[in-house]
Length: 213
Image 1: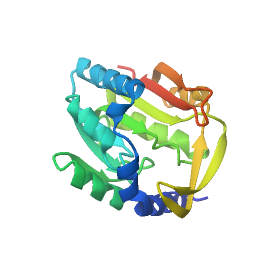
Image 2: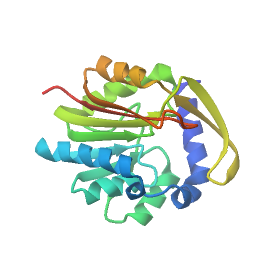
Image 3: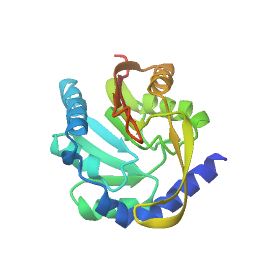
């Protein structure tokens, strides 16, 4: 799959599910563990002096809104115009723009924090070093990165979800250590790695990292 195919397929799928996604995915506040991890990320950004934060792969803006409620100067970026339309409608006071993790339209070292919350899961593994390099580029020295992803070692091809059938979307499950190695390989310091619900049908991973000061 070429870069263009991966991006086009992902964008097309989320164009279909945007409205239903907003209805069925619960707010961050309902998940105690994720709320704690995202709050810790926000606290670290504040402790580092604050500054711009980007929610990369923001979807309908639910995590963007949570980070804004934690006092961060946050904006959202997503591939899908339809997801962004829902985000702008549901969170009219926040800033959203279209973009790709592969080539972010952000200046070098301009961010105090970057969040990629389940937005690396559709990226073919061979492209993840490029994504991590982009994340490193846009963060300032001392800036923090928080990742969320599915844990495993396989590709899942999804044909239904969020009340829709006939979808075509690849989801990549990654071992926590592999994500840590990718992040470290890009130059980050890994601060925390979390494996949530290892016995669950879909275990979840979290990695918190910092660009060296």
